[in-house]
Length: 327
Image (cartoon, rainbow, N blue to C red; front, top):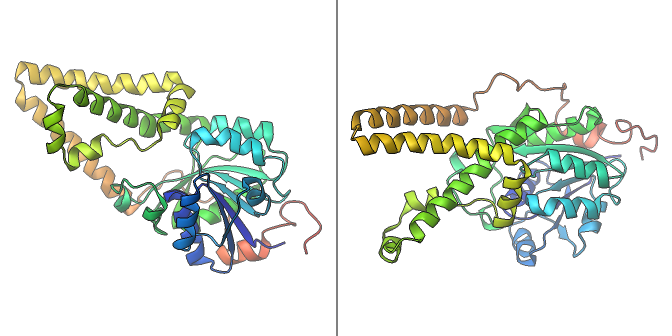
């Protein structure tokens, strides 16, 4: 059996960008799309991200040889519960939710067919400051020259993991394997807490008597610093998913803020300037490493990959998943 259809559930920037990247590499594949917002579906069709859509999420999932969940964390459980018994037995289910351990639990509970591989593509460094989240911001190079994190269960079929790697290659991203629990702890630091802090900063200023005048002066720095990338529902759910990790990273940040406060209060300009300079140097180094995608440890491919076209159109399918009806 060959891969003919890829189904994408969730058609905002991420889902549509993945679809465009697949279309660019493999234009003959059929891409089905579903989103709860019908305007997103319309936009996805207009930009050529999907070929067909359906009012039924279950039907879209059931028709996919590869099913990609690009929905928010808060939508994940009910989505997996809805489609879990309708996947084809050979289907590969790829989930992009920002937290993986709870999703793995829901998959174990509700998915009766197919092969699940949790993945998380990291955005291209040159596109990170674009704060738009809708289909209008979709870009086939959104994840190019970056990494795609994979957290497969030890029990998953290796062919399914190899398929996830190939999707990463189509996106232009290098595979990076990480422990699922370690990944969740890191994401709390990198996604959840920054959004919580941005919300706190906005509220701190928004609640002051001077906000009426301040808001007219707020520019790029304030807009970027207070942007909450996750929805309110997703952010709240993520914060409570692992309270220990959330509190740890909040406390670590507050400690630095308290230290800065002491230096400002004491007039220690030299020390504060030195700290900020060192932070700036380290951040610039991180951005250079991200731009060069210069990560050597832990990124070696797990399998020998025969190439995108052969993988998806030749050897993918029944033989790899223990089926004898390769037709």
